[in-house]
Figure 1 (cartoon, rainbow, N blue to C red):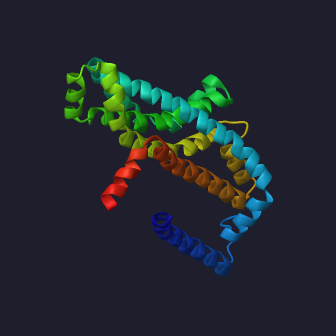
Figure 2: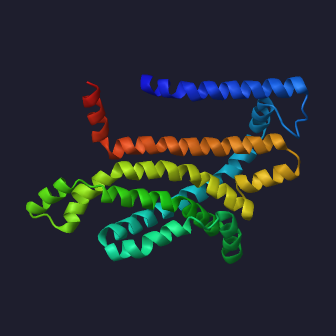
Amino acid sequence: MRPLLRSLWPPLLVLTVVLGGWQLYVTAAGVDPTTLPSPARVVEQGWLNRQDLWDQTLPTLQETLLGFALSFAAAWLVAVLLDFSSAARRGLYPLLVASQTIPIVAVAPLLIIWFGFGLLPKMLVVTLTTFFPLAANLAAGFAATDREAMRLLRSLGAGHWRTFRLVRVPSAMPYFFAGLRVSITYAVVGAVFAEYAGAEAGLGIYMQAQKSAFRTDLVFAAIAVTAALSIALFGATYLLQRLVLPWERALKEDKAS
């Protein structure tokens, strides 16, 4: 608990200073709330409209989780294929890198045109936004496997799949979780952006509606919910890592002692 508190108090202190300065400026300057609401007003109006915010958060969260699940499955499939086949690595990896040069801002409206305003185009935007860091980090993790451990297992008669499962996958896990944390921070933003392009419900369309109604306070409240979702999912990756890689904590404790 103490290491967690030591890591959390600096950003919390900075956030408190920023919000305090924001509140003082808006109050002292008498800024119109439709231009820049105070943090206190954002919290107050967000709480008063909490049911609407919750109703719009659920579709965004659904799009985020389903799109990320699709990205997760596709990343593992592609990374394993790249690891097992040098021909696939030479043919696919440059295309994966090139795919990152295509702006999502141009692709999202096309997905809405092709697949409508339902769930699928939002899932695809989240998948496209989060896929590359996952796949690239997994492939890098597989490639960084200790060669001595590989040779040892093969000398004991282990086949390619068994070696892959016992050595290459565990060695790739730190790389995978690094990519997972990068990707998960993009996932909610990808879903919100997809809703901006066209949606029936969600935080993105809610922000658009409130912006048109000059409810800047509720726009900021929705932004705060989006940030909170991203932070919660980011934090969940650490819990997942502790469950999947329990030996990492034991190694850290041994080094500390």
